[in-house]
Image (cartoon, rainbow, N blue to C red):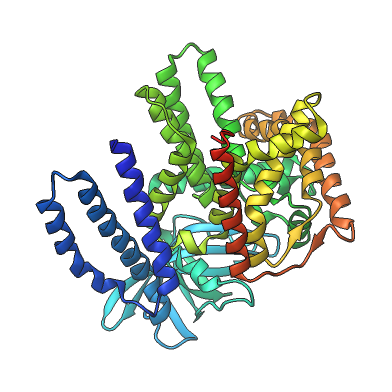
Length: 490
């Protein structure tokens, strides 16, 4: 058994432990499973020369460790724990660690020191402010306001969604004042300043209907888009085109690789610089799950090229999930974007060749680029559709055609968006980029408006979880049958 195979087994066991703990929470105490660790280590020691036994023992250890980490991370939700009674007035000092300025308000995440049971504890809170408030990342603030625990929506586990970021209370419209600069990572603070500067430049150079699109595509600032525009994206199945995704990172990597090669660097140097540039970009856009996943995959590819090792896509996906879950176990079960992006990538990896064979039988080889777009889009939509029907109770029926219409212009839109920050420091150069982007974004918005206006563009349909599981089981069975027929799907 190869070392890489052992690592994949261990990683999958850890992820499996997290998933199982989420299903059996309240019915099984995985904290007590820690007592099995010495037993499993002892068995591994006795049968050290039997590799399969050793791997099984360590896989079980990581399985229980994954469940233990998940329960440890989610336990504060059941206890609440810092504030005491819901609706308590909080008074204290804190440091702003994140900032989001939306259409209607401004949200900041603050790390605040609060006294609990005679000792000071550090907790994070989500604070709603007036959108014109000048508080920014890195500021040390004095805050006073009514703190309340978050509540779940009808079909959304908002409490767990915030908990994955260690946020357990919300304050709306508090009394807040800046009292200085807090002890905060200087790199993060400078990146937050740079992000705000680029965002403000975009607001100045692009027309009001185009600026939020570019800010969302390049900086991940989806909060800049109006609620109506987000609903249109959902109806047309084009949310992925605007949101930061793997395709964005693939394009950035291609641009960076071409640029660094053009200035005469060696390939290993280029891969290293691409990896560092991607890391800085992820920091700039505040670590969204889809960006972290894509960044890990690109980073592993770059490292493998530097050490001259081959990689397989599905292994990169497992590695990305493992590293993200190791840092934050709640991301697996409580981050919808994370879940959808992984399902979409799995669809692209495994379903695209099969769908492509079917599409090829219908339209032939004459228009291969259209066939590739149709196959990839269908594969991704098939992979995420059952999950969407459970999680969001709806599905877009215009997504396929809408995607085909916008895919040809997206690389140009993204390319212009990504070079904008470099040109924005030159007088009038940013406006030139905005002018060049105008017809492309106008076309994109036109497609979104047209398909969102169709009466059956989006249908509200809900299916139970067992139906989604049955659909995915059927897809897996079909994949296995195709493999047996020697249709290569890798």
